[in-house]
Image (cartoon, rainbow, N blue to C red; front, side, top):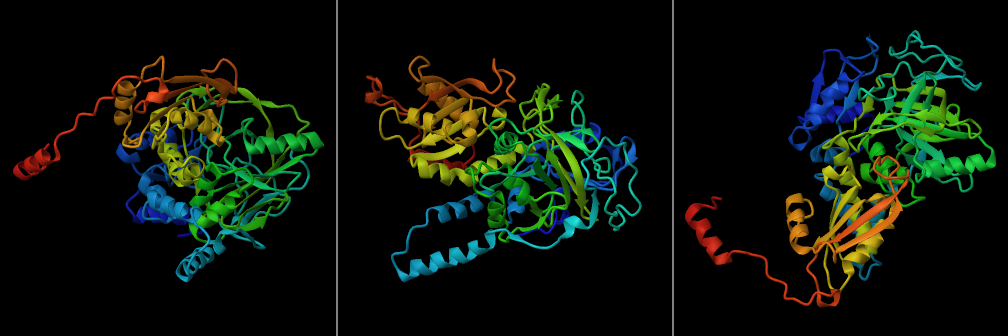
Length: 512
């Protein structure tokens, strides 16, 4: 199902028993993080939180904060409007595997699929709820002092053009004690390639410097960073639009590992079963979702010196230390009158991002299988904080096949950041870390079954000697074949006779 606003999604979570409403004041400085972290650490990810009365520097914010809204498999499924994440993945997998029809029945089925896809392509509209409150000015922004909310803001009255756009009215979190400041943690950042016009929607954290400027933490391998390099080569300012909220699939699509050049709004439209309506920005020539809750417009000047960004308590469980990044200057802030501010936190796992990353893996597993049909399943355990640790099960039919998978996956998108890649046989449940570790310890000779390589590394990885460059370790935990230099007999795994199990089940009702 499609949600018209993030508030509507939050209401759906409430009806499903997946939301806790917090009415007492909670500070955006550290307190929301502590409350949310406790919830995220509960079995199954706890419940989502709606902080109805957040405070900023002790003052009440006009916007409530929603957090941990994606932090369970059930909430991810609700966001997708699907019975389960697996069901959504199976639907997309069936679509990818579609072949030309060989009969009228197949033709009708494919036609039905094509008609369902018609809603996926985004379409432009003249205006939308994201413009109910508008703060903008045309000249480049100068340093401004914090502003009290303008008359009518929060009461359904748009500010007059020429009013000063500022971030001071948003309940932006300071997440952890050593953070360099407040960070926008669920921003969907829209940029365009100046050569091709192709749009990208990425998610890059944004540290608030002043009321009208932030850092733009697009890492060097990200599409947004590539767009910025092209603008710098052209000597042009880079327009940027940032939106928060709207349909939850918009944020999910911004984090999804899509092939380069594939529009994230197309994926969001497919998942929400309704085309994403886009409106032009007030001060930038970029489109944003009409139903977004908050939109922040501005630019990055390629001639401007980089600025230190961080520290930031990151998904690695450690603080990312300060590094220089581009500065984003705000030229307009627009929003809904009844906007909800969506946020997340990252840190020592398990956290909310585990479920978002896991859903992406499930959804795009069919894409991996198109390149590697022997893959059965892939898992990114929470302890691996996304790509640090990856488990892959395969149907092994020839020698050294596990090494083919290692090299192949390290060459696919975000998988290039994987530090430890463990390949197991198809009968191993990669979502059961105990099962994987048992076979890893039982089936490997470290001298024979490890592959040490080097390549691009996550710039957030504090353990690498150089930023963005590091080692990789592949572990072949599959049963060994004679062609792999194994000359002994491979022993069978201990299993009880099925007839004995059936008899004990009959006698004792399956106890134990």
